[in-house]
Length: 162
Image (cartoon, rainbow, N blue to C red):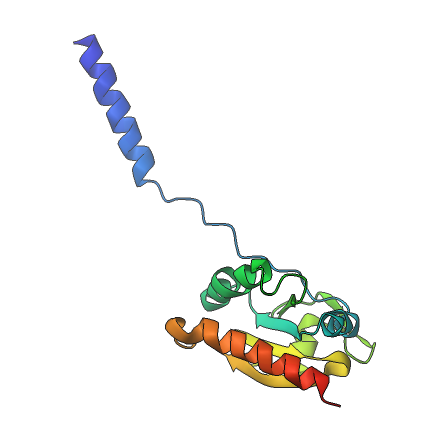
């Protein structure tokens, strides 16, 4: 009888643990933008745009774009050493130096760029030159990767033009 109580209590305890909500998965993290013009020049030297995702901490679509597309992009051998990806938090007052070398914050820069809804993935060259139309929203998941890769390739071509 004693053995069966231990068995049942172990199973019951395991069942309780299995029903507890799991801790949230680690948020998809990307480096925060800090010196935009320097970061854009770094990307341009590698022949690619500075890729900036404008996001909010409470935006699940932002987390998806970062986790499913931008982080794997940075690890993709085709883009190794070429892409520079940074995040700007629309909802943060983190310090930032803009493309002109002026101090600002993430929130003020996002407002100056007229970012209202997130996620927005933008493609910049040195001096803040926009190299391609931004990808606004999460769009269709089946095609998002191709939108992203096309924007990077078109941005790289635009970098070569004066």
